[in-house]
Image (tube, rainbow, N blue to C red; front, side, top):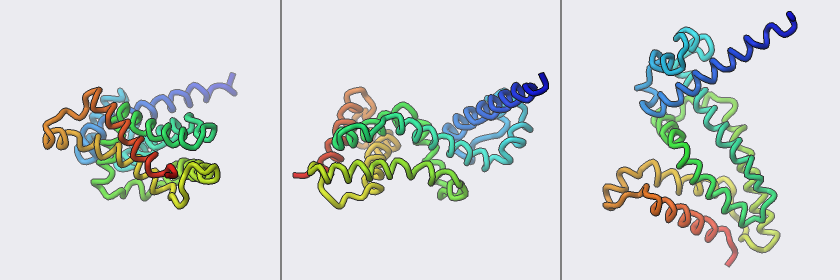
Length: 213
């Protein structure tokens, strides 16, 4: 019996920490780092405020934990695409479509990154995990580009990191600036039709760049 006693406590601790992370993600995404309040996070998570400080140390440390968590989520989702099992053009298209779809389905990811950039990424610079989490997707994309080059379908000299930044930015800029862009151009850029057009456009741009003439 005593051998199993710590397990429920461990599960409860894991649940509490996850509840705090989920609540903090919503609070930070809605109000940013400056506007977020630990009292409200505790209320959202239905935990004692002292527990937040016990597990995470400070509001800034909690913000970093949230950033690491959302980066881990998107990297895990990318791994499930099994890109290396696809042909190079299919893999690049799939990654491009996935990135757009993920940003659409997780708007908090964009707002959290906006907040992180507002603070010049000083939290992420302290992280020992984020670079490790991000390197696999660049390595995978590099392998895909090299295979496509050897197959004669991709042109050479494409930098995997630059290409990934382009894929992300073509989706990120459109979505993070959709309110101003919609106002400037007098169109609702988040209608179903507009989203489908943008998704298709991004794929055409990215594939048009990597495919050999």
